[in-house]
Length: 164
Image 1: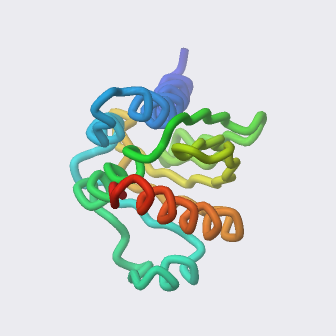
Image 2: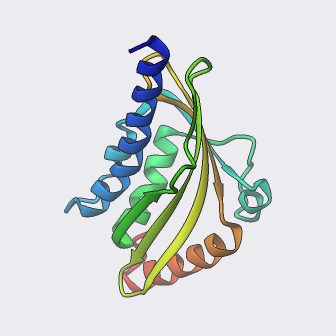
C-alpha cells in the first residue's frame, strides 16, 4: 500500500470515529462532551456556515470555536438529546491525501427529549495533521432545519429546567 493510500485510509478512519463520537457521547450516562474531542488536534478550530446563520445567533462567523468553546456548547446540547444516529451520505466522501483534507456529507437523525426525531444534513470540510487528527472543521448546516431545531432545543431545555 502506498503512503497516499495509508493517508487516505487514516483520514477515512478519523472521519468515521469523529461522527461515531457524537453517538457515543449521547449514549454515555454523564453526556460528556469530552468524547467529541478525541479526533481533534489541541489547536483545532471549528467554523459553522452559512455565516448569516452564525451572525443571527449574535456570533462572529470569522472567529470560529476552539475545542473548549465547542465542548462547553455541546455539553448543554448533549444533556437534552435522547438519541442520535448519523450516516455518511453514500459516495460523498472526497479525500485529498496529498493535501490532508477531506469533504463529505452526513445525515444526523437526532431526538431531543420528549420530541420526535429530526433529520439535519451537514456538509463537512476538514483539514488533517500528519497523524490524521482534525486541525480545522468547516461545517455547513441545513439552515432552515437548523433554525427550527435550535428553537426546539431552547423549548426542551426550558422544560427540563434550563439544561442547555
